[in-house]
Length: 101
Image 1 (cartoon, rainbow, N blue to C red):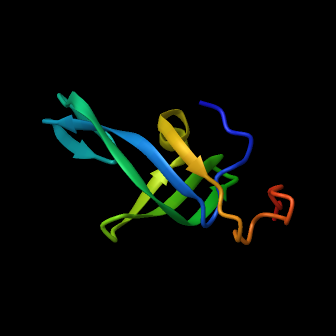
Image 2 (cartoon, one colour; image 1 turned 180 degrees about the horizontal axis):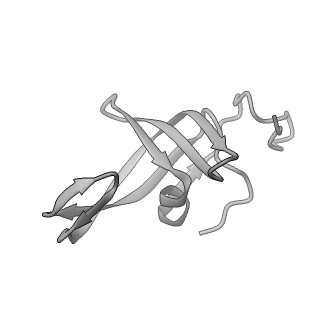
């Protein structure tokens, strides 16, 4: 699914997060883990950052239950179900364009 605006602070997002079971998890990798399905998560983006040295976009998303979840862009973008840009986002101009920093 392709959206015409970037995900920024204040935006509401819904995505499917893959879930795994088994294996020993270390730094996002595991041996012997098996895919058991997806979990639909939703929340509001509190912060986002882009690491130029690693070329990775990272989002801090406040979920409905109040927990804060860090999600890499490479995991969020392909699994995105719904994206609702916030009109009052500090990263957007009045016409909806994304302001670059």
